[in-house]
Length: 265
Image 1 (cartoon, rainbow, N blue to C red):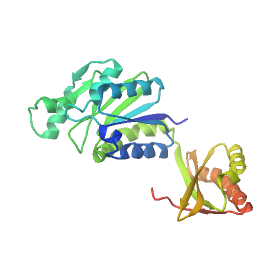
Image 2: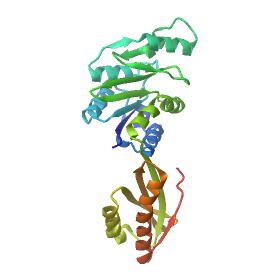
Image 3: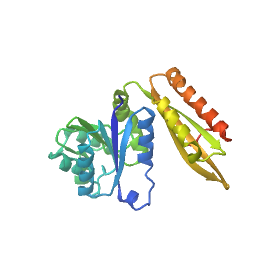
Image 4: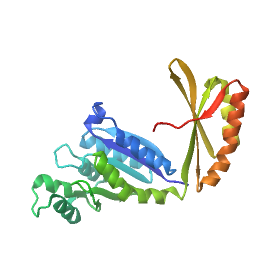
């Protein structure tokens, strides 16, 4: 079975609504597209206790991987590394490998206290190269769960995700990929097809079906999402075609219409 992931996004700007949590959405989408189960997305502010508490709670659920974003910079409110050490019961130490990464990033041999802060990691952690920024990422394992901390700057986060997180996800996916299709159904309500959806789910347990009511320009309709985890597109197609055909026939038989569409994101 594919592995599980929890995401922790830090930053007061997220809690105050000043910044959209695009990092959480982007990471969740990348993980789920590979068949990884995203159990939770937690948003916390720039607080030592809040970050460490969120990490302890996530660890108690024993996911395979926890991804943290934000709080790796040089300012006093960047507390992720310290919070990780606090949550794990480890010392915070100056990591020589991380220190060398920071020296190369700034292009100077001597670093002041603010810049040296970027190289303070929990004991036993490994720094991760940040090719677009100054702050190294952090990788540490605790109780069978791997924890990765990435910068909150989206471009840096995405580059480091590709470099360091993607290989772990490929390992966790077990070779499965999520295949999906989207449809619109007009002329029927969710209550009209509830029994049809239940029958399709029971008959095809490896196919996931979810409906979302929508209203556009005064016209109501259903957006229907269908997906499955499979090692190949051919196997996914053979699973999904029967479920899609049954949904189409059932909706048409109840006076509705059923057609594919491509979502904007």
